Amino acid sequence: MDTKKAGGYVQNPEQPNNPYNAGYTQPAYGQQQPVSYGSMSSNTSTNVVVTSAPTSIVVAAPRGNDWLVPAILSCLCCFWPTGICAIIAAVNARVRFDVGDYEGGRSSASLAKGLTFTSLGVGILSAVVFIVLYVVLWKETENKINGYTTITTPPWK
Image (tube, rainbow, N blue to C red; front, top):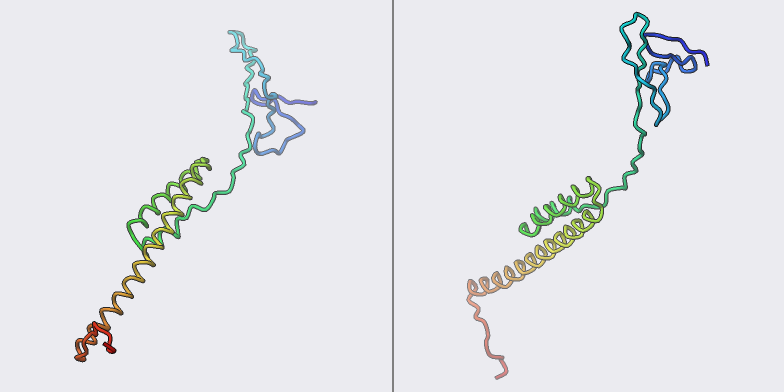
C-alpha cells in the first residue's frame, strides 16, 4: 500500500475522494497507534490517533395506538370529566411509547381506551335520558296547555 505523508496524516490512495475522512486512514477498532510527544530535536514526528466507536443500529418498534384523538373527541362531544382523564392517559401512553416503554405505553393506552368508552357511554346515556325527559315533560306541558288531565283511574271502573 503506497502512502503519502501530508500534514502529519497518512493518506490512503485507495480512498482519495472520500469526503467523510478526506482520505486519512484510521486504525482498526481496538488498535491504537502510539502517540509520541517528540523530543527537542528538529526531526520529531507526531502520530495522531483517531478512533471511532462502533456504530449501533437501533430498530424502533412501531408506536401503538395511544387513543389521543378519540379521547379528545369524547371530551368535547360526550362527558368531559372522564374525557379529560382519557386525554391525560393517552398523552402518557404516547410519551411512554416515544421513550421505548412499550409495556407501559400499552397499559396507559388501555386505560385511555377504557376512559374514552366510558365517556362515550355516559354521554350517550345522558343524551337518552335528556331526550326521554324532554319528551315526557313536553307531553305533560302540552296536556296542561290544552286542558287535558292525566287519567289516574282506568275508564272502565
